[in-house]
Each structure stands twice: as structure tokens, then as C-alpha cells.
Length: 138
Length: 381
Image 1 (cartoon, helix red, strand yellow):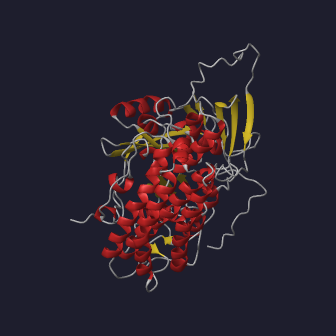
Image 2: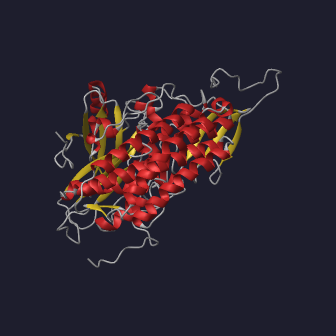
Image 3: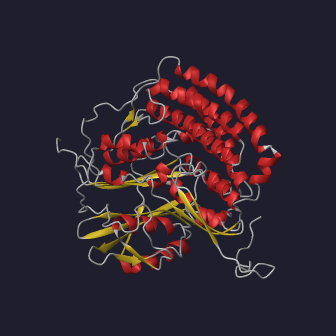
């Protein structure tokens, strides 16, 4: 039988944790066999940032998306670098563009923008006079 | 073999004279940095003690820019991510949009996508292998590889009019159907590729100098490859049998018969040769896809002019020439993406450079960098 062409329903399991549980949940996932950290990113939801971690396991043929909310005023969370070293540059990227600090990261510096850059551009409220906004013609 | 830098006495040399670390800046605009990247290298004599990879020179804020554009306007931006393999970012982004907006894709479009992406894989690997060879001084090899790539670029030009930034895969299908005689041109090209690849294999990978420069350099263990998030030929060169086309199949790949190429030693030589052999597998996929390709439309019908996917989020990844290229897309129901994140394989693979280069000479650092095949448009986004 031929496989379906677009697997629209193939949504992953989502695991929502509080930000205090991130490190513990990461260790638990790694223990269960999720050896591969595919992606770390964040979404600005206004009052808080939502951190998104996607992990997968070759042996289990499964992937889990772990999410944790981080308040805007106190944007910090435990690093998962020691669980998955793949978090090294990806957490630096989130720090650079969202300003979320990762406690326990060995080398938390800006990665794309120069040292001394003011602000974190992927925050929704970031503004820069040099930024060109597209007209709202739609 | 890398030198154990921990055991080296950095305070005094053998005759008692004090030595100190030498800081050498490579880049940002250097012929062997494969784009605009910079490495700050701490040297003890000729041995790399610490390498600090500095990226961001090509950061254009594509993720931020896409929050200010409609879903369709983002597609040309994705071309500018991996400009050696634009088709992959097009496709990965379009798959995410199709999943969010529930757009069914005609079968012929899926086959065309597979054909162009496998052609792109050959073109991209030729660029990667050729540039890595030019770094080691084998410029002849670069010309041979570029000749092969040029023929593919010409096929793409015939298909969609562009040579580098194709904007070919669109949400709902592809922008143009194959012109008359195009599939025949592809087949006649494919029939020559295996011979050209064998020539490149003899010319470069069989060469004693190239083997001497690349064997045992930048050895990556299979465990480290998985833990550090390496994907694509970088991980497969270390023996990690992981290819999304095979292990998380998408599109029409389940209907294709091909093998996953894996290496043994995880050194620069195996990574390079994995890329070369993957091109053979790509030719197998292309000829099967052309044989199976049905007729019909290449774009979903009744597609609205303005895409407004329902609120939600999705992550979709495909196997690009560099590894798992994923797009994380969040919609709030408006005509513009709320958030678009690209999980870039070149970025994740390049994070290994500081780890792999330690203990090698400065000239081997260039070999390690070339073997990771970074494209800085995708690293910096």
C-alpha cells in the first residue's frame, strides 16, 4: 500500500512543564531514550515567553515537544546543555534574540548580534527606527 | 591524529624558554571560511588549543522579517537561507504552511518536488565536496565538481527561470510544471552522473595527498554526533544511520527504493565521501520519480489569494543536503506568520567545529570546517 502524501494529522506529543521543571523533565526525557535535541526556540506570547524544545528518539521512533512558559519580567530558565550538548548554540541564539537567560549554560554570549547591541529583536515589542515596516495594504 | 592539548606544557618549551598562546584571526572574509564566518584560533605553535567560531555576519533577521510579511511573501526569503540548496528551505517552509492551512498537494507536484530536491542534493554536495577540496589545494577537483553542478543549475533555469534563488516550491504545489522535454533532459543528465562521480572519486578521494590531508582529521564519534545535534552527512559519516527520507519518511519517499549511505570513521574523509555516494542514491531516486510521476495539476486548486491558516502551530522537517531542516511555524489566524523559526542543520553542525578542531594544526582546521559543509546564509539566517 502506498503511504499517504501529506500527513496532516501527524502532530507530536506535547509536554507542558513549568519552568522550574525544565531541567528535571529534560533529564527524564533523556533517560527514556530521547537522545536527540532537535530544536530549541521561543515564542513571544506577550505576558510570557514560551520555550519550545523538540526532542526525538531513534529507537522509539517518536518525538516530543516540550514547552515551558517564562514570565517576561524574569526571563530565565535552567539550561539543558548538560543533558543535550546540542543546546549550546541554540540556547545562545534564544538568549541573543529573545533575552531569555539560561542558568548553567557554560558560555552564554550573544551569537548573531554584536556584543553591546541593545535589545532583543525577536521580542514582539522590539522597535528600531531603521526597521522598515510593510504597509498594511491587506 | 589530534594532539592531546591538555597534556602539553604551555608554560615552557622543551629548552626552557617560556611560550605563550598565539591568537590568530581567520576570517570573516577568508577564502576557506565558506562564506562570511570568523574563527578566533588560540595556537600553541601550530596546534589549535581553542577555536572560537564567531557567526552572525550574514544575519539578516529573516525570522523577524517573516513576521511582517504574508505567508506567500515569506517563500522568497527562505531562498536566501541556504543559497546553495534553496529548494530545501522552500519545501520545508511550504510543508509547514500546508500542514497549518490543511492544503492538499497534487501528486505531480510532490514528485516534482522530490526530483528538484534530489537534483539540488547533487548540486549542493558537489559544491560542498568541491569547496572542501579547494581548501586542501585540490583546485582541479573544484572545477570538476562545479562542472557537474552547473549542468543542474541549467536544468533548474529551464524549469523555473532562476539559477540560485528558485522560489519554486510554493504552498499548495510548485510554481511551474516541467516544460516539454525537461524530464528527458534530466534523464539524459542522470545517465552521465554516475560516470562523472566515479571520476571525481578517483581524482580526489583516491588521491594519496587528499587521503593524507583528510583521514583521521576531525574525528566525530557517533555518540557525540547524536548528542551535539549533528544531522545529515556530518552525522552519517560517523556511522549514525539517520536519514529523514528513510526513518521519518515524508512526501513520496516511501515509494522510492534507495539506501542510506553511512561512513565508519567519522573523519573529514568519510564525511566527504558520504556526500559523494549520496549523489549516486539521488540519481536512483530521480529516475524512479520520473518513471512514477503522474500527470495532472501541479498546484492545489481553489487556493485563496491570501492564506490565513487557523491559529495553531506546527513543526515540519525534511532531509536537506546538510541535515534535518525544520521549520517551526506559529499562526494566530492573521495573514502573517506569528512566528517562523528555522531549525538550521548548518548551524547545528557548525557548533561542532570548536570541539573537532582542538588538537589539530591550523591547516587542518580548514579541512574540518570544509568537511562540516556550512552555508553561512543558513547558519546566520
